[in-house]
Image (tube, rainbow, N blue to C red; front, side, top):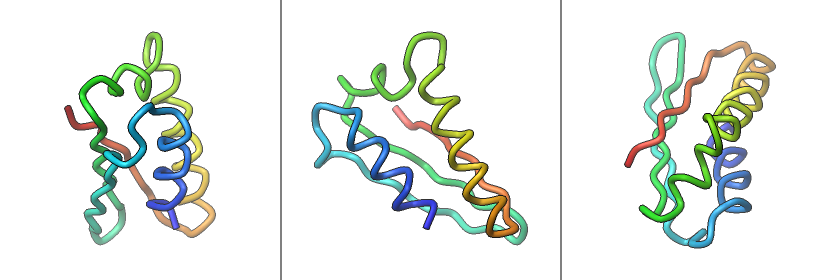
Length: 77
């Protein structure tokens, strides 16, 4: 569920949506989502002073909490 949510939001922001990939790493109590986008789109995903990345993480956290889990987002470059 969280993977599809992050993919949808990020693909709406970037110029190259076909290069967006989300890798899910499941742990016992938490999930890590690794986000990879095209090099020229990294700035669009992070935003000024990290505002967009923070907003995506907030949405992700709310979705995971609803399911009784914890989730974190890592943006790979």
